[in-house]
Length: 298
Image (cartoon, helix red, strand yellow):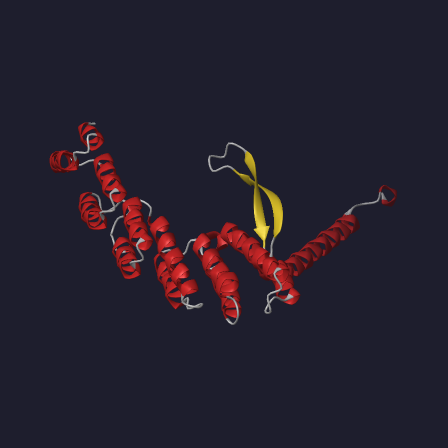
């Protein structure tokens, strides 16, 4: 409040002194932001840089500060500074929202790529680096969309390979990554449809149909609760490329159960033994009848 009063009185030196003392004694985000806003309005870019540096020393985990600093440099067309700031930002060990700063960095490189007549190599490299850090389904989808719709041309085939790579990755995960594969295939189908609507040269109805054929059937099933307190309904997905394998596994399981129970040989042995027992009982009965006396013989 005291600094704002000095600003109204056009006493900028006094206002800077108040802000500086306050930050030195008890740094707070609001103090930094108000001080930076004042210097921005005055057009003092160098002072803003100094304040942003101090702000990041105070809280290097705050992604929002890195992004605001980079946006300021972008506004004054200091693109190399922007890139350097984003590199420093994503290299921090702990960040409040790492996905946000990575997205802004990629968006910046796409912006530069469009200015450089479609040179998107740096943006593509950033996507690959991000996939080394996280395999979240949204990253795969964003990367595929970037290759198919933003870059286009020969990169469309690479985008399709990327989607297949993502599909295989999630398939290898626990529970076969079913939910992620469903989200991935829905996005892939939408991208193929969008390319067809836009009349993209590489768009192909056969490619779209191949994606549709990969989509699963949604089944409602029941399972027992872990505590044994009843049953619950849930949805499961059966993918076409797993249906045959599942059928084969069921047949194998049935065969193994049959083998454990002795199979047909044991059944035949049991039947033979039962027949022999019947024959022995019949023979014993005949002998008993022959030894009995007839009352007429007396």
